[in-house]
Amino acid sequence: MTGGAARLVRGPEEKRATFLDLFFDLVFVFALFRLSHGLREQLDWSGAFQTLVLLLAVWWVWDQSAAAGDRFDPRRPAMQVLAIGCMFGSFVLAAAVPEAFGAHGLVFAGAYVAVQVGRSLFLVIVTRGDKRQRPETRALFWFGVSAVPWLAGAAVQGWPRGALWALAVVVEYTVAILGWPTPRLGRVSAAEFSISGEFLAERHRQFVIIALGELILVAGLGLSSNGFEADRSAAAVVAFATTVLLWRIYIHRAGEVLGEAVATARDPLRVALPARFAHPVMVGGIVAISVSDELVIEHPLGNTPPAWAAVILGGPALFLAGRAIFEYSVFGRVSRGCVAGILVLPATSPATIVLPPLLVAATAALVLAGIAVSDAARARGHPPEPPAPPG
Figure 1: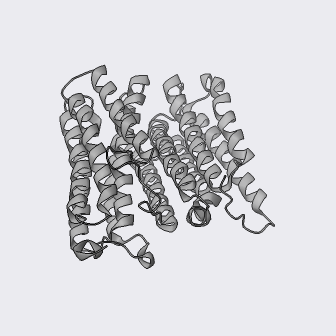
Figure 2: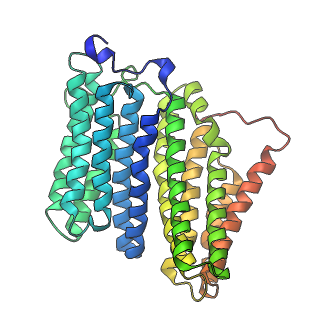
Figure 3: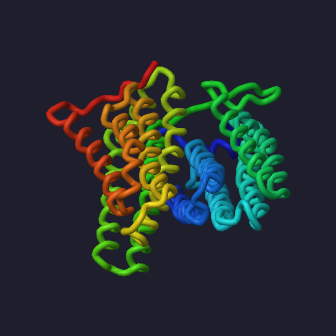
């Protein structure tokens, strides 16, 4: 790379998250909080679909911004301006989340398109005349294509908006998986697409911590707002324990060695892509758990409606499903404890007819505890398991 663009690129020795990366992540605590609030307000199939579409959009904003931080040096003033601009756009997008399928559809879609297209256009301009411009041009082309259903969806109401926005999300994720195939430019080549395994792992660990922090926020607000009675305090303890167990299950051991798995793989993309897309699945589970924490702390006793049982048990099951994908991408296998947890959690749903929400949440926490104990027992007395990605 030559000229001014050369100064913007991160060197191999600089592949660590910076304070700007962490500062950028702060807005996504707010985004996840708004997503969980929106799901709670409409806890049905329609609400779940809408939350899924919005979550994938929010995640994609973070993912593409984090990827730009991997390629370009955030210590440079131009990159700092870009990051702050994307952060502000993400803040507006997050604020519009609860009414994105209502009165604030244009605000949400407009902020989303502005961030994705604006970032790509900025990077195309600053890399002009250099080979690094090609992958940025591909991203700009496809975000321009997906902008059409995003903005068209904002102009309509009801199911057409959901259909158009779902189409936009599917297009964006599909072209990324396929290597951003673009007319006249083709797909991203191995030479153009460099992956820093340690940076990838560090940034995704940080986002999971951000998501778990939202659970702490929700549980703390629920406890302080509803009083410290014994039943609500017990529900808060279960919520806190669940958060700790999610962290333990994520970090052991795939979360610790993802960077090494990418760095040592024959084909880093075969490790990075599934690991990357496993994270929004886990975060989706955390959003559902956030809703369940709030509900259980407010109403720990009494009947457990089916919709409540779905998030209390389904949230951990969804998290474990994402963790299974993540674990397989790093080790080429899935632990039996994780598989058992995915099967046991829905199998306990008939018992929710007679159990109060607090006991249903405690049951889910016990399943997670069993997986954490199983992982620890398997590792005890053995050297740390090295990554062994498939293929």
